[in-house]
Image (cartoon, rainbow, N blue to C red; front, side, top):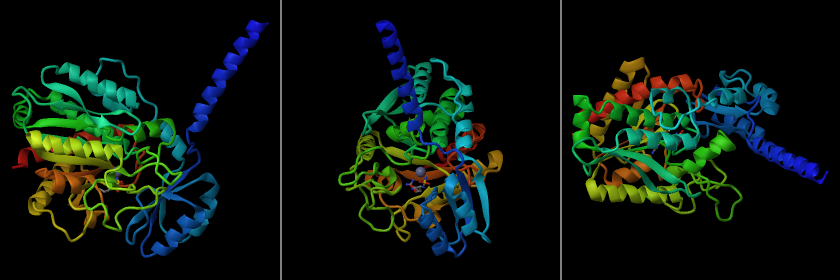
Length: 420
Ligand code: 0X9
Ligand code: ZN
């Protein structure tokens, strides 16, 4: 009897723990995402967003741009009434269903880093395993590295590879998944690493490996990425607590300590998606990544830095903090960005726009590229927004991982071929 009681209370304990886990995951069932053509109605659209308490995917609405607006089930009718007469399309009829479909990860067997990896998205732990497995296929010319620890103590993990001719050559550094929900970037950075390594015997790739060391970090915001898989798929920031606020998270791409104090390119509200932090560099991830870049520059030079984001299909250059400041290498950067975009388009016809961040997208202060260009002094610095332009946004179906990887790889090869 006593034994039975114990058994049933243990079972109860287990099942309620499981229930807590699943109920901790924010449901997007019945949520719709609308792409609304704003035109000149900026004030009206802002007003709708504020009165209905809605969130947006690409920042506050701007004149002449589209606003991608997330609408919970209980607000759909009111939202549709408010936008009567305006042009809108539904990106997701049921965001919860789209997320469920995207989150059916294929099982990953330890030791099987092969091309089937790119047929689905994956858990954070599997990403780390994949990097380790990939490394073990190239034991003498690669290493799994850590740039340092995240807020929650995760190693910010990357794969370093250098070809046959030895390491310590100028570095090519890629950051993926600084924004937690931009899952396609994790996969595409891995796709590039995987293809450079698996083609490393071809004369062309061998040539690149003879000139450069590659450091590919698929997920530089591990805590945020894990949080998108356990709790809220739409999380963007890191997971640090903020003094004086109950809101969580710095936007790592507003926190880099260069031109951080400039106003208008980030939020000072800890609850905002683009919260800049209480001080430049006060996010642990920014602190370790900036220190790592400076050290790498001092040790071996940084030839190329790319910060990979999604979505919007843009290939951009410094600066974010100012629309009038012009990068020292601007002419060459624009030419390289245009060439990369043409190489991308040649693969599947996908169009990327190019130009400096501030005039192409919006003003963004404390961003990684401005810091890496001016403080680190990397030779070539870009940031890209991968697929798509707004059919699916952050919840990009898994069958676009491979095509997105293929075209982006072509863009990267163009840069490797054309950088001086
Ligand atoms: O707001 C951002 O940080 C980027 N857009 S996103 O939707 N991916 O969040 C644009 C800024 C690009 N600047 C740098 N990557 N430095
Ligand atoms: Zn981003």
